[in-house]
Structures are given as structure tokens and as C-alpha cells.
Image (cartoon, rainbow over all chains, first blue to last red; front, side):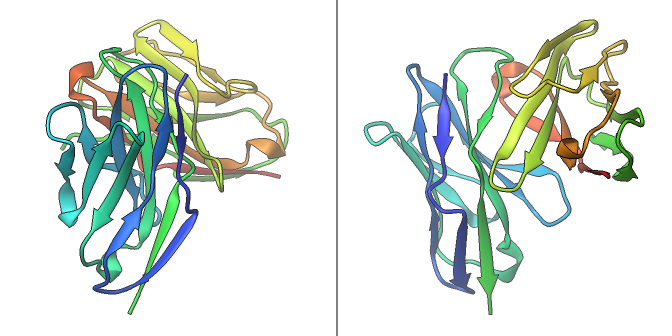
Amino acid sequence: AQSVTQLDSQVPVFEEAPVELRCNYSSSVSVYLFWYVQYPNQGLQLLLKYLSGSTLVKGINGFEAEFNKSQTSFHLRKPSVHISDTAEYFCAVKKKNSGYSTLTFGKGTMLLVSP
Amino acid sequence: EAQVTQNPRYLITVTGKKLTVTCSQNMNHEYMSWYRQDPGLGLRQIYYSMNVEVTDKGDVPEGYKVSRKEKRNFPLILESPSPNQTSLYFCASLGRPERNEQFFGPGTRLTVL
């Protein structure tokens, strides 16, 4: 089984500051990694995903994440946040090459961007 | 527009009164799934379906039923809702598994009094 730990439940940050949202995972097999974003009163939207290849993955809205296999981490970063980035962010994993197997989500990190 | 729709978006009900939350996708996806989202717990899968007439339990199936009679629809049924089922519910669908992108509906906020 897989598990995902998002170490911070809330991250407050000022506008235009950099941010890193941390995600660590545990799995006995190789996994795919995902970050989803949930804006207020909306469903989840895929931000980026790591399937293979380059460990630095770029997503929408200027976000990027780096897969670190030795540290079993997939931290999400943005060099300069906007007020509109205020949302909840979920890290998720899925067994590699497993077809329709389930996504396992972390508990989420609420990013609060203030002026 | 490719989308997953859920109805209703908001529902307040009382203990024991059967309800159904509908989910529909227009992307011809094989896989559909229901999650509940609770503060501090993230998303937990309730049930999923890999195709018509094929459903299976997720992590928290107790108190829920589903059916998949048509590819596009995957309703969630609460036969006898209880207050601990007060939650935010999301339906999701997935097309080709190698694309690895689930599409989520907008959510249904359910309150059981």
C-alpha cells in the first residue's frame, strides 16, 4: 500500500514571496506522483504530474515540483505567489503501470496568500 | 466541454431519509469513482467502477451504495444517512489509464441532521 504525508496543514505566505509545499510518500513499489489544486468551492484540478523522465516537472500557473526518489519526496514550489493561488493543494500517488488503480491522497495543505 | 457534473451541489437532509447524488461524465470514460473529503483527512475513496456493471469498494464504503448501469452515470446512494456522513463528496472519472489524469466534479456538500 501507498501513503502520502503532507507535512504542513497550512502555509501562510505574503504575495510575491516564494513558497514550497512539502509532500513525502511511502511505497514498496514505483509510483506516479501528482499535485492537485482545489480552489474555494470548486473541484480538484490537476496541477502537475510525474510519470517518468526528468525529475523536475512544470505545471500550470507557474508551479513546479521535483521528484526525489532517495528522499521519497515530491515538493511543490512556486517562486512568486499571487493572491489567486490561495487554495488547498493535495499530493497524490498511484502505483506505476497499474491501470485503473486508486489514487492515494495526502491530507492537503492550505496555502494562504495575503497582500 | 468535457466535464463531470454532480447534482445536487448542496443538500441538507435528516437522518434515515434515503438520498441519491448523481454523477455524470461526457468524456466516455471507463473509470469512475466517488470520494469524500473531510477536514484534516484529505480525500478518501468510497467506491469505484472500472466499467458498466463493475463496481468495487474503496477505503470507506460503509453506508454507501453505487450503481453503474450506463457508462456516463455513477450515482451514489445513501440508503439511511447518518450525521457522520456529513461531508463534501466528489465524483471523478478517468479515461485512458496511461494518461493518469482524473477529472473531478464540482462537489456535493451534504449535511445530515
